[in-house]
Length: 104
Image (cartoon, rainbow, N blue to C red; front, side, top):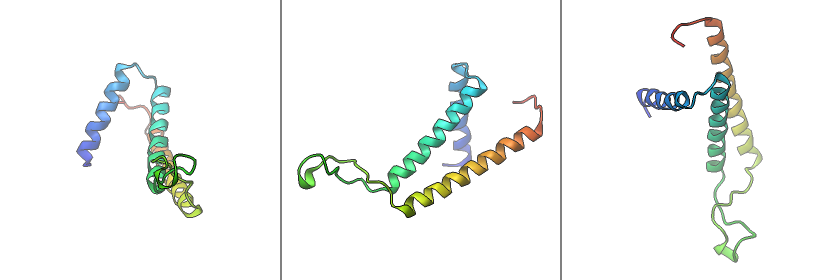
């Protein structure tokens, strides 16, 4: 996805939030939900989907079960989440430091 594509996507999201009369708290809540969803998606993709042991018989078990990540996988994702949170925190503080801006 290009920077232009990302900007267009963010404008779409902004339009939806505006249409629903989202408050700043609503926007922050949505941002948190998106970040958590993205980490969840990465977590799901990091663990191979294997049949759940309690479903079906043998290799015919239910598809889509992901066992808990090993310690290394969890550690890497925790570090990534911390880095993402640090970047978001820095951007929030930088915006506060800019003070009042008529275009926001």
